[in-house]
Amino acid sequence: SDVQMLFAHYASGEPYSRTLDFTDPDLRLSVMDLLRQCRDCSILDYRVTLVVIGAEYYKVMGTDLASNRSLSYFEWQCIMTKLTNVKYKELRAQEAIRILLQKRLLPMVDV
Image 1: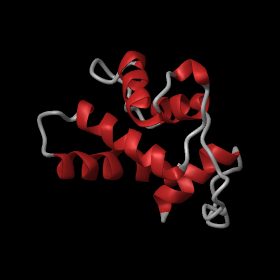
Image 2: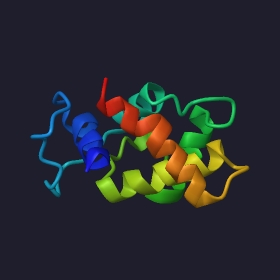
Image 3: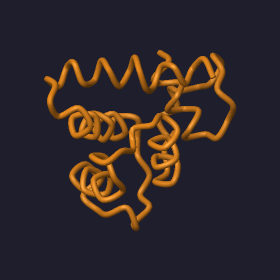
Image 4: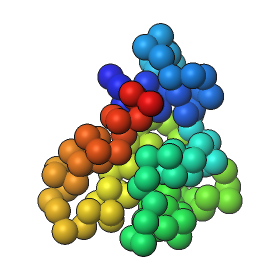
């Protein structure tokens, strides 16, 4: 899927393409790449700050951002879901995720 390939793009540092191998179980996203992706997809705002990202990272990873522990695709999905629920707190979770995908992540595929 496009979302899996976006993860692979940020995790591998390779240019986005349909040939990216997102099935590699060892593919992991660094903390810096997570923060870069949050910036690039405009998820950062007055609700989703570095402090909030750190708190949600801690909930999923059990450690703070300074540990620089990289994320698997599943962990990245969990963090993005949590950040989406913060960003769009007035919406139901399912609607918030739909907006993140349609307005923030998938448009990055066409850049």
